Length: 287
Image 1 (tube, rainbow, N blue to C red):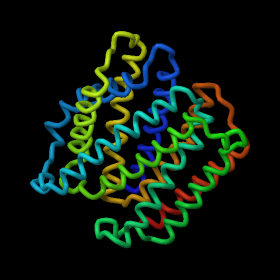
Image 2: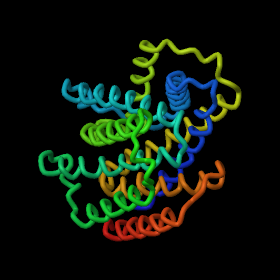
Image 3: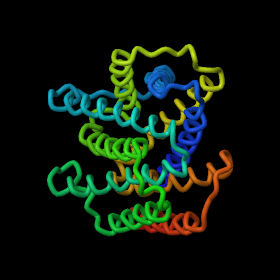
């Protein structure tokens, strides 16, 4: 079961490639796409809820409701920022900044492990060191001089990555009251309602290929998030992050080379070797 997050990494990388291919179209508005993608996720999930529904009474405590609403609002803002950036930047420019998210997640979980019992299993120093080595290696080897000039799209990706880290770490606090599927479904429903009320979307300009890709990515993100939440509950935030969120960008670069014809440098190959080694060692320690 320690290798299940690797499947999540493949799914995340696949989802990123498809979304970039979709968002680079001139007729696609990132706000409309955000709302349409959540609509697709919600519809796809409905039949599965018959088998995977779980909602414990603890979820209805005022404190937990407020945490859930905070998670949903933060996730909406994070998605909008990431899609806004992804619409304009190439994956080569976007990924080095997005790679900060795993580092943010790891550090937040480790810090909270000293204050909250729910994060008490996040202070394994060996896995923390491996996670930091993998994160920093990934950031350094994919950062180029021109990335140091932060425009509004890069800043959006940086803020979005941090907000995703906050959302994911907060999710750990209330996951025990839900199944992974129930939690993700309700989160997406709340996001869909809020975003629809604010932006009043129109899907008229969405072409057939985008419709097709959106429904494919809906399936991808549903299973990816289910694996992610399962990993948080059973394997811990830091371990899941090092396997899923840090390995995934390596796959993104490989897929970008294959499907989007983007170049892969020697530094990126070196970082891939270092990260795979960290994942293997973390898996052995995790056992």
